[in-house]
Image 1 (cartoon, one colour):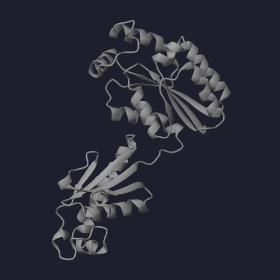
Image 2 (image 1 turned 120 degrees about the vertical axis):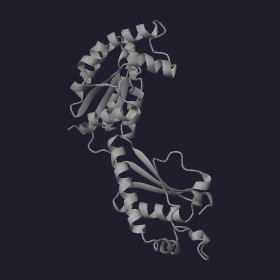
Image 3 (image 1 turned 180 degrees about the horizontal axis):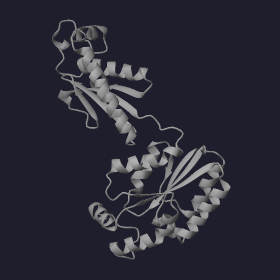
Image 4 (image 1 turned 45 degrees about the horizontal axis):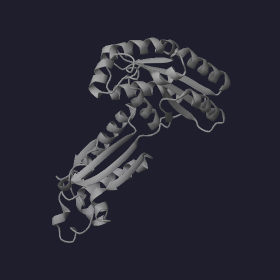
Amino acid sequence: MAERNLILLTGMSGAGKTSALKFLEDFGFFSVDNVPPAVFHDFYEILKRKEMDNLAVVVDIRAISNFKSAEAFIAEIQKAKENLDDVTIKIIFLDADDEIIKYRYGKTRRAHPLMKEYTLAEAIRKEREMMKPLMDIADEIINTSNMDTKEMHERLLDSIKRELSKIPPIRVIIESFSYVNGVPQDANLVFDVRFLPNPYYIAGLSELTGKNREIGEFLEKFERMGEYLSVIKKVSDITIEEFSLSGRNQIKIAVGCTGGRHRSVYIAEKLYETMQLESRNVSLIHRELRKDGE
């Protein structure tokens, strides 16, 4: 396996190249869209000098037009392969059925790159003709017609696994919050812990937070606390693992109670401590405590 990798994302306009490029960026690739011919050779030199390990570039119909033809671009690729013995160069061609491309353009109201000279249907036919030589030499062709973004990312991840020395661990954010102030809109998992006994109504505890030992001792008297912590950890683990396999690079787990200062803080702290022991890439936010400057 080469230590460094150049992924060339190409294919039909509207097939998902921009989304694929952002996905590769999340996995540690230096990503560049719409590479002009004048700059393309510079990337070879950067890789040759070992200034970066993983590079992903989009070469679409705009770049091919600037190269004059797909064949001219293919000649550049061949040069790179001859000069970069220790770099794996992989071409991934993203395709979609013509009717699907028409639908996507209609939905986004964007103009096809060739529509200055052609109607949309003509532009798609012309682009397919111009891109065929690249499609013929592609290492992998992914037809995204019947894929949602998640499915496309899963397929792309499967395609580049060999090129990655390791898949970066998914980042886990644990956030405690108050239902009074609203559920975090970017949360992937939400645990409601308002069923737990509320320390707010106990003299000497209301002014403390879930980070204080006394709150922990109070909540641990709840006889099913151990069971509950075990269950939410298991649910979190399954969700993290499945999101990671789908190519997601971040997940947020939110834990909420009424005021966001006692029960949710305690549970979030316990979940965070457990994941830290497992060496996960995990961070912790106490939303309401942060607002109060605590």
